[in-house]
Amino acid sequence: MSSPAKKPLTVLRLKAVIARTGLSKTTIYELGDPSHPRYDPTFPKRFQLTPGAVGWVEQEVMEWLEAKIAQSRSVEKAVA
Image (cartoon, rainbow, N blue to C red; front, side, top):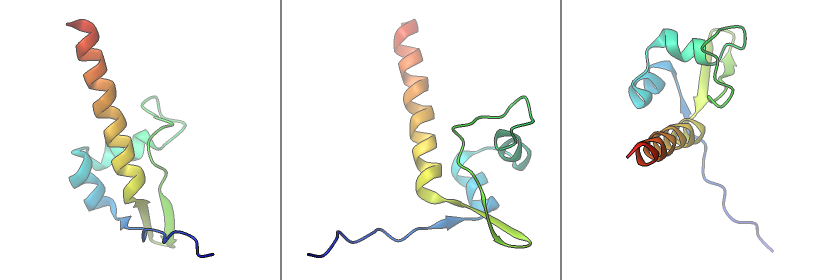
């Protein structure tokens, strides 16, 4: 029996995360920093690619965005 084909992972570098989320570099790093007041434990974790490069999994970034959109829309409906 063969297992279902895995979708290949796409790694996003910082510029791509900025482009996808509309957030600044500073905000992205603050959201991922547990010691910062703006920390968001739901924000996708970055991972080390090489000693000088990090990346984010595209699917995790997109899921986070979708959750934020859904959360925003549910708040709008509750207020209306």
